[in-house]
Length: 247
Image 1 (cartoon, rainbow, N blue to C red):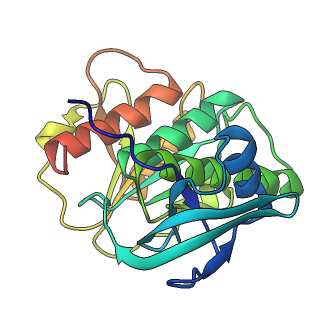
Image 2 (cartoon, one colour):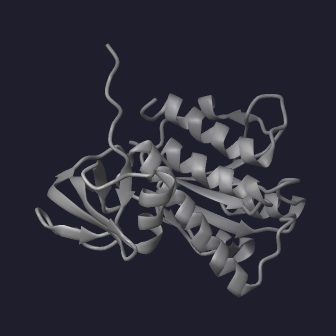
């Protein structure tokens, strides 16, 4: 006997009134009506990005948008037991989009895009803000797909050197480096936040690698093979979830 397919999920960034009527924002309305091709009477699950989800029914679809009838909130957590921040050197094109999407699915709490010496993409401030907004949209869509009710923070693009000086007490700092002596399996389960630093295409420069180690980052390797930028960080997060998390 096959299991019924769960209702599509819709992210609503504003406050959701319990047992009330809610108007879906334009971007999500377009997704509901034109991508998912839902109709009035269809069931959806609304979530607020802060940990709550709501059973809802489409009340109306019009040119003005989608209106939902929503039930009571339920605090449903599908968050990882690990507090992982991915600091990712900006890669080009779909590579960065893929990294953001899959990192959210794998359970990271936040993503910090970094402008590094070997980043192929060079972003002026205005364009950097647009790209960060684009990556936040990808994070939202990934939450809609994977069932997370808390949307991970995608931070504004930061310069590598300036970001390197920021540190919270008790965090474990790791950087991916082919040829490093340590493996993830050599480390004890961290008790606090994990900051994972991954380079763009071509990796971090020798200067950046040295500065990272001075700043307390422990180099770790992922086997004897050199992984692509869109593979390395995701493989590391998956390994952490297997060793210490909820896999």
